[in-house]
Length: 150
Image (cartoon, rainbow, N blue to C red; front, side, top):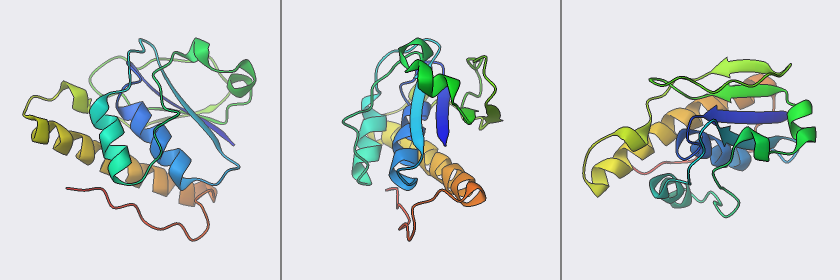
């Protein structure tokens, strides 16, 4: 199975989803993320993933054009995570799902408040990914629940 998570900047929501899905799904699932206007991995997104033991070394902001053609041709799912902005589109035979979430990077506040916004978003995405994984039978066997700090 091949899954692509998409949002505009590929810096926060889709990066959180990519990291969480890679962590939660078995190795038979190939997961990528991309954006229509890629920027850079948001440091709060990286920090929240690292807090729960998700490896972030391979995460980087990228466009769909930067993904392998074979991966794009064989996609099973495209999951968009945009809410208030126009979501990127991709011409593909893949099944489309939409999980609308506000961009945590656009929220005001102190460093700690920013982390709380990212943790809340990560918790929501984790729940969606776990439900998706159960529905399609791709959660790692005996997976232990991830506990996102609050």
